Length: 154
Image (tube, rainbow, N blue to C red):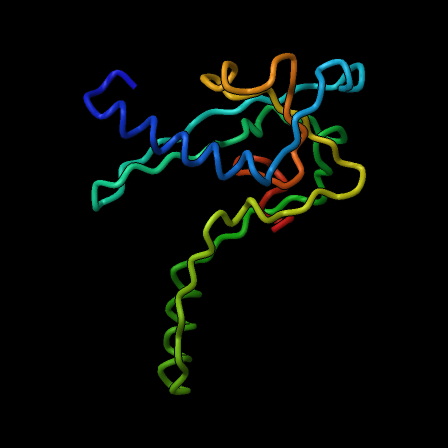
C-alpha cells in the first residue's frame, strides 16, 4: 500500500468489501458472541492481472480454524484436477466431437452454505474499523475464501 498505485489498490479493496458487505455477513454486537468463541481474522490478497487491472480478495485465515468449532474435518475437501485428467477429457471430447465450454464462476467460494451448527465469527478487516459500526463483529452467512470448508460447501 506504499506504492505509487496505492489509490488503485484501495479502489479494488473497497470494491471487494462492498460486494461482500452486502451479502456475505451480518454485523452483530461483540457482546452477543458466545463466551469462549474463537474469533477468526482475515488477510487481503492483492493481485495485478495481466491486463494491469488490480484485484483484491479477502481471505479468512483458515489455519486458525478449530476442528469441531469452526468446521467438521470430515466436511472439507481440496478439489484439484491433474494434467492427465485434462488431457483424457480433451481427447474424449475430440473423439466424440463434443463441444467444450469453459465457465468461470465469479466469487466461487462465496456461494457456499454453512451447515446448521456452524457459526463463524470474524473480526472486521484492518482498515475498515472506521467505516463499520462500532463494537461489532461479523457473523458469516456464506463461506469466504480461506475457510477449510469453503470448497466443499460450494
